[in-house]
Amino acid sequence: APFALLVTGSVAARKMAAMPRPPQVQTLQLIILALCFVFSSTSQAALLHHSEKALGFVSGFRLPTPMGRLAMARRSLAPRMLLDDETYSIPAPQFQNKAPGRTALEALSTDVDEKEKILPVRRRVRGSSTFGRENRVSATVGRESSRDMQLEEQAQEAAKSAAIGNRYDPSEAEQYFKLRTLDVWKRDMQISVPFTTFLGQVLVDWQRGVEKENRRKRAKDFMEIIASLGPAFIKAGQALSSRPDLLPPEYLQELQKLQDRLPPFPNDVAFKIIEEELKLPMSEVFEKVEPTPVAAASIGQVYKGYLKSGEAVAIKVQRPECEKVIALDIYILRQLSGTLSQMIRLLRRDIDLQSVVEEFGKLIYEEIDYLQEARNAERFAELYGSDPDVYVPRIYWRFSRRKLLVMEWVEGQRLTSTTIPKEQKTRLVRSMVQCSLQQMLDKGFFHADPHGGNLLCTPDGRLCYLDFGMMSEVEQFQRYGILEAVIHMVNRDWTQLCQLYVRLGFIPAGTDLTPIIKALDKALPDVLGASVDTFNIKNVIGELGDIMYKFPFKLPPYYTAI
Image 1 (cartoon, rainbow, N blue to C red):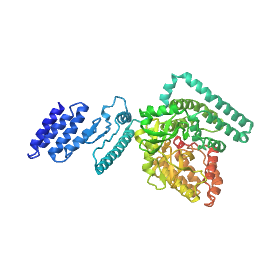
Image 2 (image 1 turned 45 degrees about the vertical axis):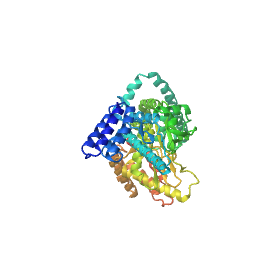
Image 3 (image 1 turned 90 degrees about the horizontal axis):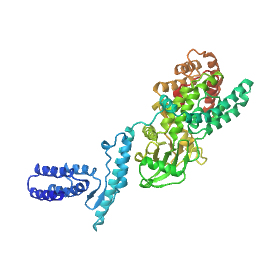
Image 4 (image 1 turned 90 degrees about the vertical axis):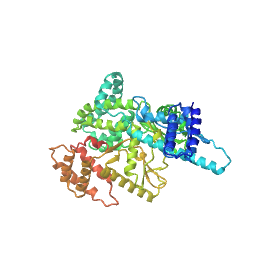
């Protein structure tokens, strides 16, 4: 039936060639194209192929306007289309037909990736004309590149509009783990026994008056306990390492040694997760994946790989059961925080540990959502990527999911490398200072985990940021507060500085500020008065940390990320 209609249409088209083209030609064109939408996909493909030739005969050139545009639009719906001397596939992600409950991104992974799997691009060039052959191949390659760009843009939009992943909710966690008392009890014992023993030793030291003498040893014991308890505790320890209001300097120094490194999990487990997230065999996306992970951390591990198109990429895959382990640990930490706060009060410290744990829970839950990390990287690049000395890797949105992140592979050196030239180091420091000031005081969106493993020096000397899982924001009033604090420090106005701390919630209202003002006046002028070549910001932070620990400072929960 389709071919009979085509013959009839072609004859009619020839007879109409001598007639005035509008409106008869447009009417015929509409009839022929309307028929294309009726038949099965195979008939549609053949019909459209011949209808294009009929249209070309009538109009005098191939793919006329506006009907040519309609025909091209129809191609995006055809699973496979024969066009002249080549076979070409155009995958067309359609979200309106996705199954109930699927996110836009999941629909994209099914509708795009499966079509790419089933419908490879093939070229079949005929004829002896070298010029014609080159033109056809270059046109096809151009369409491939255009298709890739289109799919990447669609994937990016789908990821941005996809529902936000799980976020930390104390009440939901309470309901969930109430029904799993055995799991909670087992993990509770693993955590509470070493911590209770440790706190008992500290209290005994305190009662015997040897707490300061034994502090360095207890700090080392504390760090080892944290390191042995898994990903949530390692992340918590790293966060605690910058909280001078919670712990004395000796503890902070030990916690700063915590490395977010764990033994890698097996490749077969990692590759299975990658294929589950992609809903495709790895061989159809990656040309090659190195068998040894280049990094293994508490939440995931990273492989170096190569896409089919040849680009080198970093493939970040999440550890199995990672969210379940972290959820249980945060739940137990929140339960223990009340007891720990009471014990800390015996040391004359009034700290709301529960709010600190809740703020930490929000941060780490965002870190285990790799799509959120991709959004963070995109936003960071938009805000700070225009700086010629800062580099942000590209995200490959088509292959990124909640437990899988594929981004550009960046060659570079760790900032601690001894092979970086001195003038390049100076440039890196300047770039880091300028970008950090922009993040904290100008834009307010900042990288909350900029340790040495997340920063690289590229071969051309630029500062490259990695790992955008832990990001946070400073509100405008908080940015003004930081600026005001700097001004009061420069002016040595300790009274105004203390009053600012009260307004920001660092010091409880009604506290006698006189001893704090005297302590600031005694500790800070020397370090602030140092010459430029001997000035050490670490000394300033150290002196402030001592004061914050000795006096009733209480950093607000939002300060955890800062």
